[in-house]
Length: 195
Image 1 (cartoon, rainbow, N blue to C red):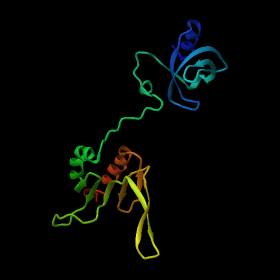
Image 2: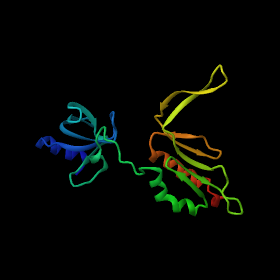
Image 3: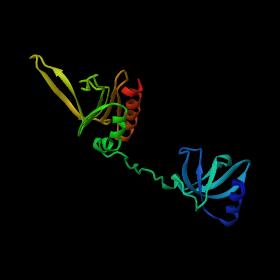
Image 4: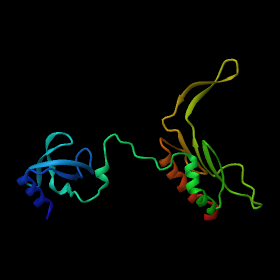
């Protein structure tokens, strides 16, 4: 049964359909609609998401049958996604063997994780090649008239996760999952075993 046939059937029965609409202000989101009419490739329907009668382009409608499990069914406005990595410790726990297999020396504490190359004798270089840091606060350092340097304007950062890499631009992120994605990419790219 085509999308148009299914919509015509719903018009006759008054059925409410779950659809994924690939247009409008939220393309790809799940909507519940009650179709009213179809004309010139457009569907007039009541959208229960906005509680308004709207026109939908027929080609952009995908009907979701009840037995199908879709990610869009789980989408709820305002609901934050669950974080994959809860802390630097969980990232290291999951990916530590991976870093070691790439030839990295690993150093970490609760707020940072850094990867270092080694000298030929096996000792790690002092400076890191790739690092991931959590820096909750930032401030301005101001030199006073007395010659002393003072910390002023201390404030919480909106993007507290920082990823640094050798010959790469420093990147900041609002959550650990996105920062970890770039950190892992750079760990592979700059790995001692990849050279």
